[in-house]
Length: 328
Image (cartoon, helix red, strand yellow):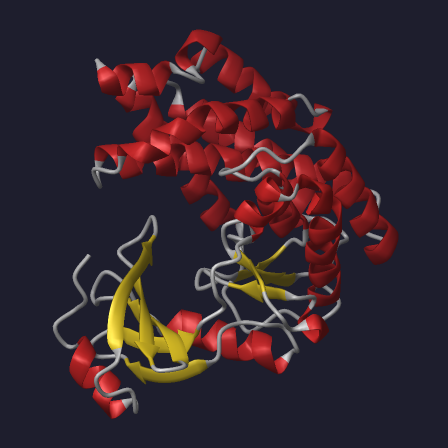
């Protein structure tokens, strides 16, 4: 992975002349990341090239979170025209690898992640667009737009939209407060850091944040697309959240609806990453996603959506179907 040609000049202006630029990671978007090393100093260079990416939402949410006492990366330098941002380096100790290597610590680390959400949800939502019906509909539509054509299924899209329209009011009319929804709050975007006052957790990848229902980030954390969260951990963390946050009685139904919504969206996104962006590695996550989606659909609140899936995407067209199709 080669750094952008403008990176050295950017680093000179930022006060890091001659620093080494080492590939760090990419993600499911056009963003790329590099570690910048200069003697004892290190930082992370985000390459968010326009017009595909705009780093301004990341910067705004990072500064908002820091002001509220959470550990988002401090912004060290920026060049918005080039899409380059130099940010604080939280190291390499991601929650995913940490708990996979130390399963005895899983309950403790996830408890800290829940406590962070509880405190975030006590605060007024940031000045963000709403997570509303239009966004929900657009996201769940990725299943019919990408997954179904990929496996050769012609489905009833109007009935699909009607099914979601019948269950989304459970979320929209909830008595829960409107909060800052980070939207990708999961084990690969949470770093373990030496900042006890910030729960010892560093936050990443929140540039798509919206204002919405508090259950969404719980789903993101506990029904993780990239690792199997043990059912007993999910149950314990939900119980912990409810004990600390005292959500309204409709919370469990909203959690199921948002779980189904998010998991359906991710099935569509991972298919699109393969078909449009040439990233077939995301297909390996689909069996997990279908398992999570089916579990959410079993909730009585999701009955209309569950019926649509049973009619339009039968069991033999789920789980391994897309991987087998891709390899054919």
